[in-house]
Length: 266
Ligand code: GLP
Image (cartoon, rainbow, N blue to C red; front, side, top):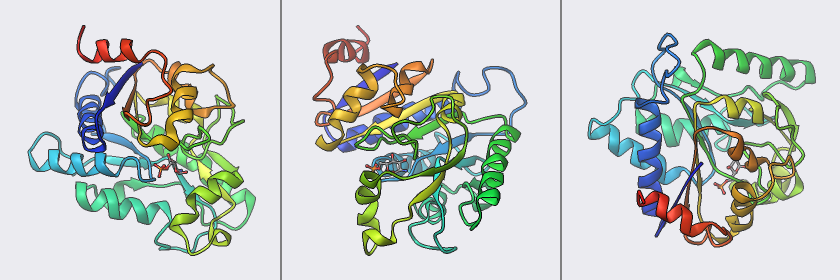
């Protein structure tokens, strides 16, 4: 695991973009010699990766990477929002990623949370796993982290081996995400989310976390025990995980000097 602590959110976005591009174009990409389906990037929603997406757009303009034939796979989606709801993760990613990065909307894959019955939602989750496998898996999974340590919508208690499935959201996550809706009553109670096992299958993980509200979750995820109580702790189980933090999110880390020495190439 590599941990970078940057002085501000702008530097976090730049470092994270560098790590994502390296994963998409370098050794992690198709290292196993599989047939290339082009770039496959896993996309997180939330505010944490927005600066990173802007940096990736700049990198594309500069000719450092080309997303025009890339596939993007969302981490998760709410269940039960009306089609085209502005806070559905499909719409968020169309706005924040497809437009700026030139990623074709038909190659943006998002779990289908539109069904109203359990059987159809379960089938949609299985379809999603098959869609990821069909393009050879995810090269780089971009991640944020919830204040309770959730990854995607894998809430505390999620199986470390879980696959894409329907999950209930915690009260904490619904209240955290209420800022995007008119009222907390409008926040869905359920989601379809990639499982932690699905996330771990990506060839590289790049986590972005900023601000003091994330400090406890970051410390637990990076330096606490590997436990379903902190889904973010699965980063420790991945062979190529990168965490990019600002100073506020990093205050709880005990091994800070070591990370800084490693980042400086010492
Ligand atoms: C949501 C998303 C997560 C995201 C989290 C943190 O719950 N499902 O993928 O990591 O929010 O969001 P933010 O980056 O806005 O703090």
